[in-house]
Image (cartoon, rainbow, N blue to C red; front, side):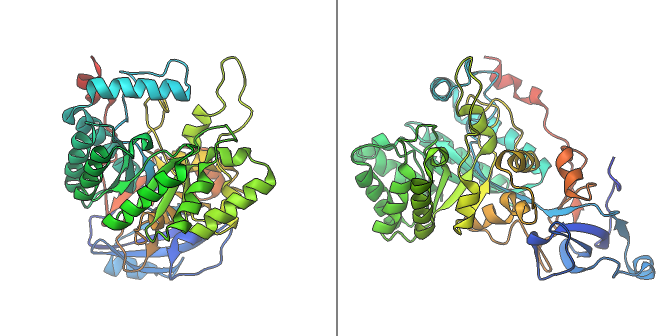
Length: 441
C-alpha cells in the first residue's frame, strides 16, 4: 500500500514532504542526495502553483487555507514520454507468435499477421488497448512507428489520426512511417507515402541497409523531408553484425545535405560491436550531425545474440554512455509490446527505466538517469514542456511511495498514483480479455 491513498477533492492543495528527481525540476534548487531533493508542492486549479523547500508550508496554513497530503518522503515524477513504440503491432502475440524468438521469425510472423488481419478495426482495437495501458501507467507523450507497406499506410494512418484526436489532452501522439527503403526508388509508392505522412502530420522513417547506393537513398529521403517540412526517425543497425554500420552513413547524410530537420535513430546495436577507434569516430560523427538516439534495451536483449542452444554473449544495446558523453541526446523507450519482436512488456516507462538501469548501468550515480524516460525523450520529440516539474506547469504527476532509489528500483511501483490536471485518474488496466474478439481467429 502507498503511504497515501487518495488526493484531496479541492481546487487547491499541497503535497508535502515530496522527494523529486532534481534533474526534472525547473526553477527550484535544494540540497540533493543521489540527485533527489525534498520539497512541498502547492497545486491550484490543476497546475503547479509553487515548489517550496520541504517544511515550508506550515501546518496552520494547510488547515486554514487548503488540505494537504503528506507523502512521507515519497517520490513525485512528471508524466512519462515513450518515444519509440509500435502501437500497430502491439498485442498480436496470442494470434501470431514468434516460434524461435529470432529477428527473422519476428519479421516473417508480423508480415503474415499484417497481411491477414490488419484492418482498420483490428489496428484501432489494439492501439486503443495500448493507449489505455500507457495512460494508466502515467504516460503523456508517445511516438509510434507504423508499418507502411502498401496498402497499410492508408489503413493505419487514418486510424492513428482518429486516435490522436480522441486522446488529445490525455496522451499526445506522433507517428512515423516505417517503410522498406528498398522501395524508395518506386516513385509512385514513395510519392503516395509522403502524401499520406504529410496529410496526417507524421514523420518519415525506414530501415537503412548497407546497400551500395545507401548514400543516394538517404539523400533522397532527406531532400524529400526537407521539401515537405518533415522530420525523420529511422531504425538503424538492429543487428549484432559489426559489418553493418549504417549509423555513420545517416550522420554523414545529414551533414552532407545540411538537413535542418530533426533526425532520430533507434537501436544502433552494432555500434557496441565495433573496436574503440571505429566506435569513437562514429560517436563523434553522430554528435556533429546532431542526431538523437533512442535505445530499446528490453526488446534488443530479447532479440539480439539469440542462437538456439547458446547462451547470449552480449546485451544487444548501443553505446549509451559514450554517446551521452559526446553530447548526444539519448533516451530509452518501450519498443514492441506483446508481439513477435518482443513477447512481453506493458507500455510502462517505470519498467523500461528499471530494466534500462540494470542493462545499461545507468546507476552509480543515478543523479540524472530519470531524464531518460521523461525530459530527454520529450525534448527529442519537440515537446520540452513535457517530462518536467515546473511552477506554472500542469499538475501532471506520478506519485510513488518509494522514497529512495533502492526502493524505487526494487519493486514495480504498481501502487503509484497518476495525477492529471491535479486530479487522480482511474489506474485500472484494461483486461486482456477485451482483445479476445480480434485474437480468437
